[in-house]
Image 1 (cartoon, rainbow, N blue to C red):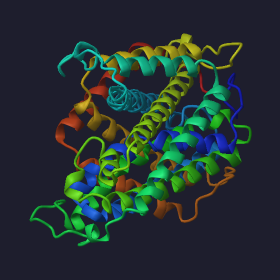
Image 2 (cartoon, rainbow, N blue to C red):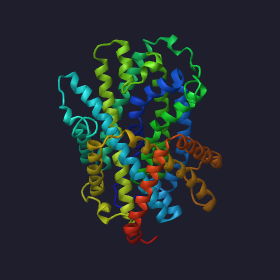
Image 3 (cartoon, helix red, strand yellow):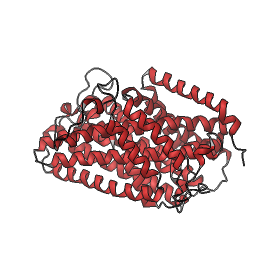
Image 4 (cartoon, rainbow, N blue to C red):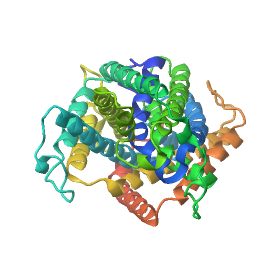
Length: 451
C-alpha cells in the first residue's frame, strides 16, 4: 500500500538519485583519508570492496522488505508490522537518533567546507558564528542555516526534493569524475607499494587486519542507501522501483568509492591523508590552480545532498509513527497543497538545526554508527523472520539464499558494533530507555488499533 496522503511522485531514477545523494557525502570527502592513513594504506580500495559487500547483504534484505511492504517509515514500518507496536516504536526511536544526528553531523561538515570556500573569496565569518559552544564559538551559523534552508525545501514535497537532489547529485558526480580523470593523469604508482603495508604489531595497524579495520570505518560511508527504503511509499511502482533504486545506488556508490580510493592513494603518500579534506589535499598535490576550488564546491554539494536526504528520511519516519498514533497527530498532517508532511518536517528541521548549531558532534558520531548498525541488523533479522512466518506472502523481489545473506549481514553488523567503545553502548541504552518512557507516557495510549 502506498503511504496514505503522500504524493506518489518518485520514479526509480529519482530513488537512485536519493540513494546517491545520501551516500556520496561525508564518506568520500572525509573518511577516505582517515581509513587510508591510519589503517589500510593503499589497500583502502579493498576496504571499500569489503564495506560494499557487507552493505550489499543488508541492502538485499532491505530490497525484499521494501518491495513487500512499500511504506514510508522504512525499518520502523517493517518492525511494527512484524513484531508489534512496542518493538516498532523502539526501532523508530532508534531511527530518530540515526537520521537526526547524522543530518546534524553532515551539516557541521558542510559548514567547514563552506567556510573554507568562502575564505577563498575573502569572506570570513567571526569565530563566534563559526563554531558551537565548547568548540570556541557561540553558534555554528552555517550548519544551522543549511539545515533550515533544506527543511524549507522539504516542506515543498517529494517531487521538488527529487528534482533538486537530482541536479545536485549530477553536479557532484561530475566533479568527482573530473577528479578521477585529472588524477589518473598524475598518478605515482610507486605510492601503491607495498599495497598492503606491513602490520605494526597491533590489530588494525596496517596489514590485513588494517584492511578489515578500514572496512569498518568506511562501512559508514554506505549507510545512506537506507533513505531509499523510507521513500518507497512515494514511488509510482514501489514493488519495482524500490529494489531497483536501492541496489543501483549501492552498486554505483561502491564503484565510485573504489575508484576514488585507488586514485587518492596514488597521488599522496597514504600517511599524509589523515586530514579533514583528503581530496583537497590530493588536488593540491596535483598543483592545478583553481581545481581545488572546484573540488570544494563538489564537497559542499555532496554534503548538501547527504543532509537533504537524511532530513527527508527522518521526516517520513516521524510521519509514519504519528500516522500510527505513536507520536502526536500533528506530525501526521499532510499539507493539502504540496502533499508533504510539513509539520513533521518542520519539527525535525528545527531540532536538527539546534543540534548542528549548538552541539559539538564528535561523540555523537559514534552514537549514529551504533544506532545505524542496530537498525541494519534488525532489517536482516526481520527479512528472515518473515520468510519463516509468512512464506506464502507475495514478494516482488525475492532474495536467493536469504538465510546466508541475512545471517552474513547480521554477523557483519554485530562485529562492527563490537568494535565501538563502551560509551556508545551506554548512550544507546540510555536513548532507548528514554524512548520506552515516551512510549509509556504517550505512544501506548495513543497507538492506533492494528488493522
